Image 1: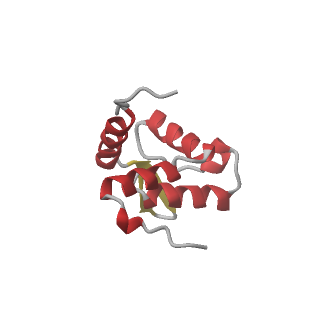
Image 2: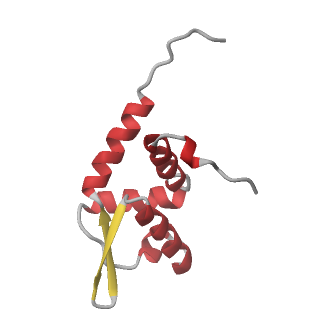
Length: 108
């Protein structure tokens, strides 16, 4: 498999691509929607609420945490998850600027 050559792209382009990849699975969208709806940290069992196996949920949480969309804190034997508010705002602006760009030409 070839190298992705991410170094030839801007930091913004790389960031958007990483976030888009993390958002590219419906289970991750469901997890984010669940956490947003709660408006607080969630320490319960996402398996019951999302309906996927524990290892699958853990992998999705790992990917969301890796790009900074969520954060988790250990409380006893539980890990509590919530939206990472500062990063969420930064990513929201980043994606809004990108998605609101207009084409200057006429094509097709």
